[in-house]
Length: 371
Length: 209
Image (cartoon, rainbow over all chains, first blue to last red; front, top):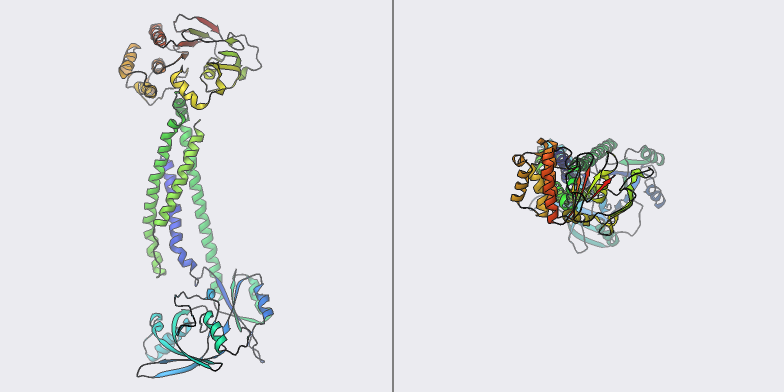
């Protein structure tokens, strides 16, 4: 009986804590800018003497169908003039000519609710490379003893954007929606770019100069060979990180696999315990049956017993999961400041579902075993 | 009623028996003695009649119905109200006391009052063992507990498989009196088996198995 109880408790606790950990950590894994989730390359053509003509549709098609490419996005350049500036009230102001590029939204590693544009808006969200901010903070500001700017502060700075082209001129406000580690350019939403190129552009459909690729396995040696043979250059997230990510994923997979195995084993132990319990008492059960006790009367006490134990185990495992969780929460917080605790409710519900399932299985086994 | 039946394990043996392979009817209100040597299928016969083994050839009828056709659920009822079997191996619960073992049956049937049970315990000379776990009783004492348990229900037939194998003649006589009286009260038939010692009853018929 004690063995049954302990096997059940350990098994269910492992399952619940594993699931709780999964739910807690899953947002970290599914964030787009992580080591774990996706691997990207930005590729360009080598700049030659006669200039860079961009990727032709045929070349894009070839890359798209390469075995290691999961998804391909094209960089779209602005085909109009952009002037950006910062004007301070009563102070200096500066203006500069600049450019925009856009990529499909699912390649962007910044999550922001402002990342959208409709023609009626007077403001454009912009993502700039994290590098730019770092250059200022750790290069310029450091050397000149000027204050450093945080991401949050930089986002408050408004820019004046002037778009010109096609005999149209229009003023917009630019707001920084985020900083990208992945894409080294000044990004605007693709919906804005399509609209603006239509309106201010010269209608020339230029070949994209850069492509962003999501690859299935960054450790695939074929990738490097493929790019080299065609004279493409790779920028962006470097390959060492990619390999690390690959091994991380592998390890996470192995750990998860072992976890599942342990769970399966403890459930097996549990079922075996019930068999054992019944087998041990088979003589008594049979005697009761021969005395005229009905099958349901004989099995009822065992059913109540096993369901009762399952219930106590359920409460126990939820408690254990909740306690153990506190230990890893602190550790996670030290490496991941954005960590948000998810409620234990979901895991409790899963626990209840497992409890219901196990109880049904127990009852079925008991009824089948008692003749 | 037995009709040309014999245990499955004896299927190819040459049997010389008053029971196996014969037409044979047990009636209510009468008592029967089945005498046999070990291994001739005495306990098997009871298990066939009591419906917990069906590895026999031929047919056994209970109230004109073949026992093999009676569903499980109905057997529960039959074992509570129509047939009472004293197992040769007794099938008592060793961790329960003498009284608890009897009460386990009685609370299912509500056939006897506590007082009646106490009286029977006294009568059979095990009144002082009322609260002793059966594991600590001698086989003879356990036999008496099991006999009382067998009487704690309504029945049409009492089936006693070697009821007094470990009892002295004095106790056997007391049991015979009690059983006869109890059976008469219900107009029940009694079928007793024996490999030597016989429960001293005025048997209507004797068979050699």
